[in-house]
Image 1 (cartoon, rainbow, N blue to C red):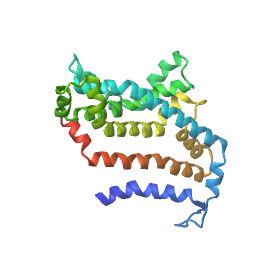
Image 2: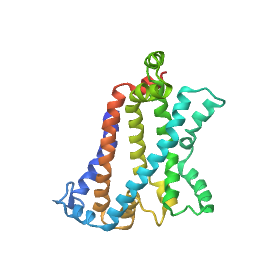
Image 3: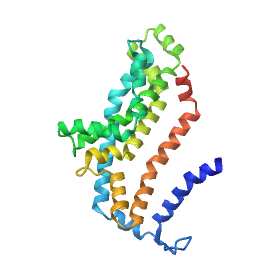
Image 4: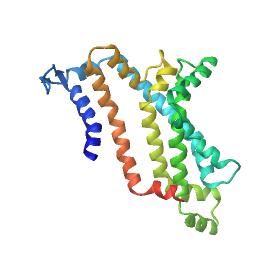
Length: 257
């Protein structure tokens, strides 16, 4: 079973990676007839590729920043405070992932159309913000719950103010897990396609949307393959970091608190 699952996951990645470095691969040959970087040069010399890349970076940075400003204080409140309907509100952040995503996006698009947000930078920011809520609420809640309360109490006992306790005790312990959440949100937003396409088209074209356009509208598989390989890089770096955090047990401590 594990071998079959590995093949299902790894084999498509190998095929896409092979196409990215292939210049000639004709049926019925099992392996490419010619390898090379010609399509890398052709892809990276396109102005629309760089425009989409910088747009994706701007969008992703803005979405992650706004999400952190909104969600991190909310996560602290969920982790440390008691208030009416706390559990209902907490689990409501999963609602967007409990239903078919595209149907939800269509409903939001109808609202955005009323406010002239279709085809705008901020319209895409708002729609992608929805996708960050689970990462930026649930994971930081686990981080704040996993902080050693005895250290906080000891700091207060010697006269530290609540603000000083937060900056000197709470935040340093929670920071690695929070950073992992921010990183996952950044990467997830960078790859997000459905909302960017539905709300942003035709004026806003992120890199994943451009990649799909290459695959669907041009009979050059290598263009899409090259962009796919480029998109793997941030994901790979993020997964390495998050794996290290999970390996330290930070998530488990928080969720179990």
